[in-house]
Length: 364
Ligand code: IPM
Ligand code: MG
Image (tube, rainbow, N blue to C red):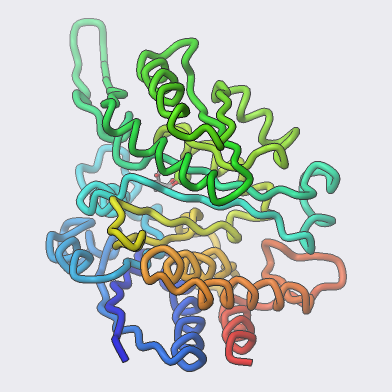
């Protein structure tokens, strides 16, 4: 039996709580499928600032490189929120993404039919929603130089830079095309080509690449129109591919479709090996939720579904991934809910109970 080395980075707020529940699911996978996961733990984010004076240590990047996958909770919190601070918890996420070359962020948005009736959006709009947003993760305004603040005679000034190279754009678009090929063969490239040069380059390259993927229908949507379309006709989307910041914003919006931020997992991937598997970072798209941290109210499902993505994309264990997803569906079908997805007649359970229920389903 080969052991899979996995790095755990729980982080701050509800990060550690939801990660514990994901480990229950992994323990159930070990027993049922005869695998062994070998864990190493890393302190990241605010916790690392308190302990080491930095959100991300070089050792952590090294440890991630030695691992098959990184399970990441969430980082940040009011304690470290001073806008003037040079050291910030978010530097952990950004540093890991960049340091590990994880340029492709996959954010699947599936609407569980069981949650449709109680959603904020009309049931008829939500029916059939099943999309993946592919967000570019190591370029754009998040990393462009120059970025700085200064003061001159006209007052305080600041600059951030959006920069994209042909290579960065082409590789993320390819991720989108390839994913669409395995699904409904529809790719929506989202940009702001009516204003931005980076977007015009993006669109030009998308059109060129489309010739290599004649089986995939490509269309283009401006990001503002996409924001609207996401809530009016979300079921139209199959795969969306977009740049870093647009993807950040659109996926928070898309999480409302799934009923709660607490439902959405994500995978961050780099260049893939021959078998298609490679080191990846897996995290819920929600943050640290300081308002409910430590109260057992967090929904662990996004973290548990991130484990499913890890099994699928980094460990090439598809049956195991599907089993985790099926266990989550089964627990919801049994009428269990965490507070964020509370519904008429459902049993509201705490974080730990939800984790145990999913693990029990997996073992059954
Ligand atoms: C996300 C988060 C991060 C981002 C923050 C915490 C830096 O919002 O993963 O979507 O902006 O990428
Ligand atoms: Mg975000």
